[in-house]
Image (cartoon, rainbow over all chains, first blue to last red; front, top):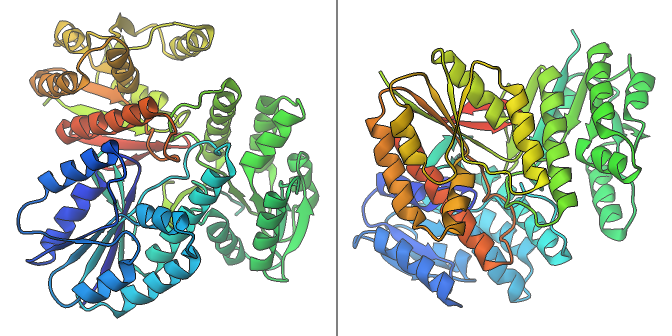
Length: 168
Length: 168
Length: 168
């Protein structure tokens, strides 16, 4: 039986490492679907560190915007790890795309998969209310996207200090 | 037996929807005690979205500051949903009121209720330390208010991605 | 058998009070290892409030930077409470020290202790991404330090609204 698993948590809470272990537990030939693009040195360094940690058994697939299409194209083989939804949302908003439609299409697509999907996302709404309106809009959208994916996932984990806490 | 239930979580973590379901489970004729005031369009839109989600069985009661009085006035009928404590705190601070006295009066009032009360609040202290002193004072006050209400509540839930995690 | 316990949570989530109770449960003659320095009035007031809450049975030991040395010097007597790791990290970064080496030395030292150690730390990564690079670097470092200490701890708690949730 197929499944979707959502792993959420704050920055540097160990989400990606937890999600990688969950993916490897689900079968061989894991596929890494990256939503990050190396726009600056800080991001390039973070991407390189993530790649170095993953082993050579991983196939990498880049999908800064076409996440739904990437899920369709990679289905039927190994488990997929999507890292991460928050960057995908950010990419959609920067590209002027309708993220609410994107979120709905993603939820629909997850229901159609035959191979499992692990999705990494971020908790961004537990700080003080941001002063600028764009940051407020982004954290609202991120929270709603997380709810939408959690609702169709069979398992949801909250990562804190590298430890996964099962919520669903 | 009467009870108080606290539902906390980050922005857009699904707190209000979780609290509404908890309230409806506790009996008919639910009363919505709103602490929000529509000072700007963004807030007006959020209030309208919340109202549209709630059904016509709800009675709405406005209490931007007089929360303790509102609990007294609505006691004995259906379950009450207070949404939310963080805005009530903000309203008290903006009005120059002593929020610590307010927090104590609220904790005392919760112990006197005969009909149940569900209270929604926000996690605002899990981001980086804010640069401005007022924001730091607010997040300190919000954390202390949450502790005070959690201490006298029979149940406490943390909402993450729309999922309630029972803490108490 | 000796143990390390990590207590994490947002600002004003009740972490310190929870950690103090855990320390007192572990034996008499508790030692408070403070990493805070009173650089300004706001911090001095917070330190004073913490000291007032703790009883006279506590011995206080100041270690803004020399945390590993303080653990060595206080071992073998009562339980130690380190409050907090986030300030220790901040002190190391401000002093231009290599915090990654510090984190490794701390993890090693925790494994050598004969008396128990309770460590308090902060969740700082669940808000919106900070605009300034130093804040981003700090929250990354704080998250990695938390993961490192959690990995060698026998128990880890997340504090929310004054309630400890056991994660490990």
